[in-house]
Length: 174
Image (tube, rainbow, N blue to C red; front, side, top):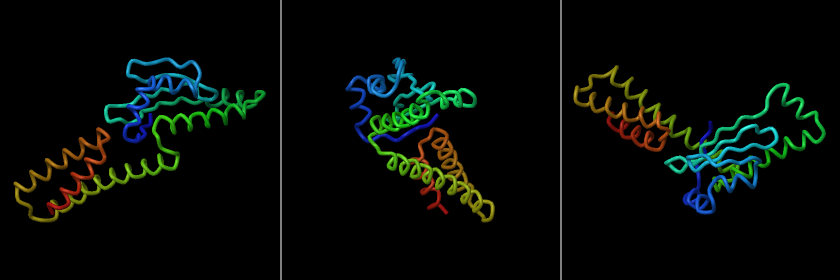
């Protein structure tokens, strides 16, 4: 499962134009709408493609691709390599249309998100280390633990922006 950032207003635009299922119909075969305003479909080496927009407006995808003997058989068949390349092209074009971002922009957004998560984890680690080494009041320690718990919850939910901002607050305490 993979989550992609979506340009502001893009999810509403896609949903207004018939939803992800209608968009997916341009790129995949056997597209069926799902109960979460998403879809399930396939094409070529992509055995199963599921996608929907989550409550935060991100595109959540789950893709199952051919492997092993099935993939070898597919690639060795007449036009198999071309259809495999077409599968990857269609997937990329679908992501462009569904997110509003180019492949490079999607990569940059993913890096940015990972960086925020890393900063939050680092702030927690530094605060715990500092509290262990120095004499911190019970009140300050309790407040720090409260922030650490909130950061962990944000990280578990995938809300890396909030986790990073809480991490900055935690860092300023010490």
